[in-house]
Image (spheres, rainbow, N blue to C red):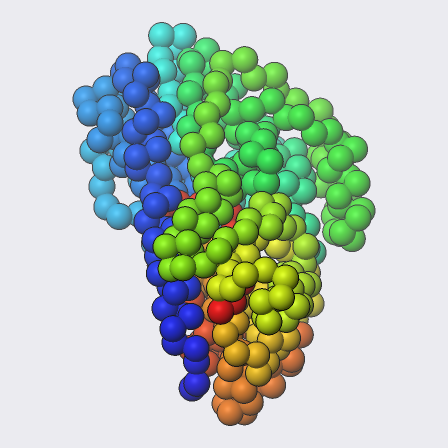
Length: 415
């Protein structure tokens, strides 16, 4: 396979350094500097183990115990006397419910003298789940799957899910009451609204039944009369025992990419931190920008254009892939034959969709490589099947779980 190895080396350097710079351990430690009092720990999300481990190191004996719920293969072993669970993501599963039930039991006897440090990261909505009475786990699995495939963004998905859960939308804060809760949050949601991140388990629900029903209608989600009636019920919780601190977001992610691209000699431009369009459209758009800039007439070369956010995919095929892989593949087909252009896109958590890849990295040679392999790239793209094609061509980006989760970033490199 022919590749622009020099530019790919630049891309890999930027990606690895960015992940390293956004390890949440130091950020958690800093956030807890003034909260070293004896506390119980609750951690949910893809970064839960890393954050809980940092909290244990920081608090020492003042970490009185707690519960960690993270994605499968995202735990790195025991942490003191914490109970650690792994569960399903992006679709909740039986282990999600069992782990959540354990946490509810653990924290349901708190008093006003108790302190809870709640470590929250993206992925918590699926991992931390206890359906309301009358809603089954199968109902939640189907609803989550349908919403994800519909192309709804994470805020819209969580607006619906929190109305069917005992722990979302402030539910967990109510379970902990009257204990004081200090929420330390890695944001994977544009705008960093604590009510949207992991469905706001310790935040007053600022959305309504009408909002949820509007989303269901907009994306054509079919629901039983029972689920519809549950969505209409008022399960609002007014949270007054929790404080929140955001310690990481797409802003830090983009700034890191900017820093490390500059170290490789690129003039850097952060174009947006809120890219939310369809992944395929984003790839086409980025490729179009690269084509216009490749001669250096508009911007000095070499340059790096940085797009933070989280694209979406409306799944119509039966293939395997993720939004970052789909973006990279779509871009590859538009930059075919163009020298000195490289486009990459990756999730900061190291997992893109239901795959073990973080994203994809393509250049002007990629499309020819697909032809050499005898693989129809458009067929793979239309079937939402980017993963096997990018893997076969060497365009798949695999980092493994990173221990953080602060959104996605997509980058154009031009020399």
